[in-house]
Image (cartoon, rainbow, N blue to C red; front, side, top):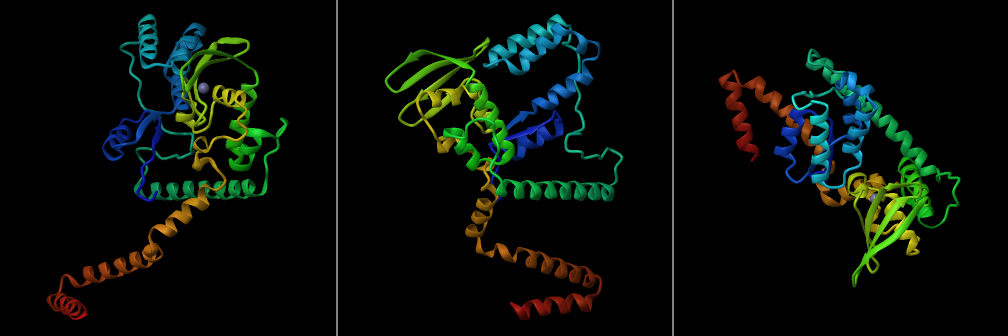
Length: 304
Ligand SMILES: [Zn+2]
């Protein structure tokens, strides 16, 4: 990671990880994965999970709140209505990545599982990289403007997400609800779902967009609200600041280039580690005998 900390980190509700992140990744924002929250809800809420009204209320809390206050109010109301204030919610093993270790797994077994998991990830990554570099995404929409730009820069799977947002953006209605010297404020909603409305701030000069749904901050690609507003202003390329490097086809090459330029002694790391191991073994072997200890110290003085 080149000693860089991530901006955001997503975990499921593991308290040990939450504590560690707070201590080690001081400037990283710790978020809970919404997919896990939903999965956990299925197993934790018992009979309630079949209650349509409850499902609606919990969905409102998870996905439809814009501000913290709004969330707290809806959450409290739900907890009280369904008498959940004393309901405990414990952590869940992460099955999503197929990492099947448990409390009883020995360290050696854990290491084997870990290596296998990493190998599986690497092989998927290689395959994805190959397909990404060879293909330009196929889409049933006309490949022009921002969509064309997205196909050129994003990885295939990210392009699919962007394409979906782009599709939604065409089904929205827009209303200007405010303006000042530099900034325009719009309300964007899906045609048939007025309750889905979000507000988008747009600054023409810098092509800055900011949406109350905060999709870009959470996921790294623009939401359909923002895309609609950029489109409205005839922007035909995704502004650079909204192309997160990590989602592009060039992410890996760039990371390697940075690594090479950053520290020319990087290439010696494997050699250094081998030598450290060899010398350490020598020290361990010689520690119990006075003669060998002296010999080691003499050799060291001579060398330095
Ligand atoms: Zn949005």
